[in-house]
Length: 405
Image (cartoon, rainbow, N blue to C red; front, side, top):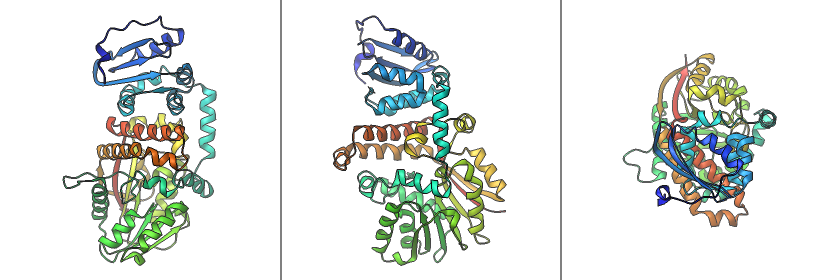
């Protein structure tokens, strides 16, 4: 942050739009926000409860960004950033400040009902039926393996890492995560493990080559399947992995244990009961299910489920986060019992920062693949938006180990 926070500035008279926007920001509870408007007018907003610990800046270059914020709320603000209508020197810091003041700001930036209805209808038509799931997964994961290789770690793991003292790299922290979950589930050499949502094969690779078990993995992404099969085929125990393009609802057989890492978020609330009933049906007696799940704070779940957020509209169509309490209700309804739980949201914040830094560093490569400024800014907003959420505790990530009652 530069010294402009303490510099006296001569400003032109604020416009009506600035005055209206200022009325919203005057209700900041915590933090200090410096806003530069398109007119050249600069204003400093300080939290009514505390000027710290957050300090951030917003530089508006177009009036349309302010209009979007009023008509579209948080999504409108995101869309303005995506289109380059405003900027900030530290996107995560700004989104942390906004997250910390979310309740106050959202109540003063009401989204127009007509726009909200359009987003809700769009979300409804993106629900995860068998056909819809393939479309929704393809939307995000079939951008191309080359794209993800530019900024993910060498294990091609696209989920929260677990940082322990011995984790000297993101790749090591990802292996920590795999090992911790496998140990919590009780996976032993020779076990046949089902992985629902096998991604690019990171866990399957770890399980067959370092734990000595068999893995059946399913995905709905053709791009991921091609990569994962080639990856496993190149390893000494790759034949122990059977990876398929298959919807979890179409699975057959029983397995010693089941693992599903950040898959539930893509299932959709309507299909959560089916998901857990399917996992239970596929589990052998005495086996355990280990899931890694991103979840929203319990006190935000009801308001969240009634709307559509930036992630659902632009990143993961059809997606929906559960809360901790809702998850435990789902376990109970499916006849499953919770055996252990590990929460590690701050580890996800660190994972996201490393991804974001790598994504910025890969800017030239991303552009070379044909992605434009709007795409890049959308993904930068997505990564910072999630990082800020984990830091502020509006979202968390957990390992749950469950079994049949």
